[in-house]
Length: 302
Image (cartoon, rainbow, N blue to C red; front, side, top):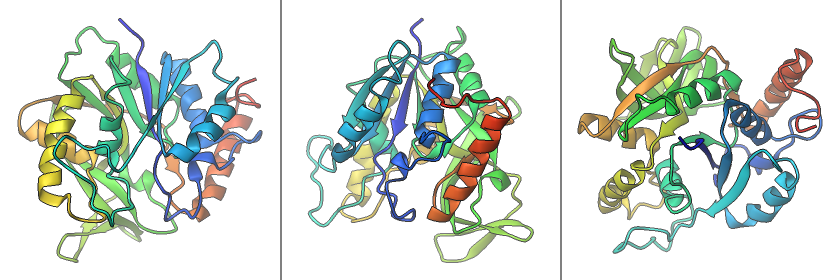
């Protein structure tokens, strides 16, 4: 069985962060969050990494990783373009925002042939999370329609500096995903959390809900499903300047249509990420602590 591929979604504009967070040094030797993700994936058995990027990031990232991955992982790049759409569709001239995580994954349809994990470039998921996902993806019980996601407790994923987007999950007694609903404005409260619904009303959350942070395990058949659902999305919302095609919504739709089964994998790791510029200091402190505890070498790549 071929080793899984790590697909990294790194084309986001970082409007709330105010800079290129994919390339913001946070480690003791100038490492990006992305360095730690790739390092953890390599230790878990991944042997290829494919970065979905904006074109202007290709050469800086290639130079950054030029020698680090030699003998460890192959490195490929895919550019997420606004005009890379299914036949018969075109991008509205006023649109500047990327089409979302579902489109970012679909963009890599020609670069990936086997099982793969999809992650966000600016999220720190932790070594255990990659290992449990790799174990699942290499399991002989896995089928072409068997997917997985690593879930985190909502309270452990909120920012002190503003609202975040999370996929709120429900699972059954077998540990399989029943539904995942993307909520785009979740914020911390004194008693847990709350989100703004489609009617502009705040709805309470406990903070204990399992959530998706876009750490997914897929088989390559997902690309065919993505094209079908992306066509449906473009028919309904393709004319909008800021609409997004979210991967949690894709998985939820496939579950409801009986087209996939998705295992919810448990990880005791604490997630952290850089949604806002103020989050950077927390990330730096967390990585410093993990390095001091011996979880990572310094420099990371030796």
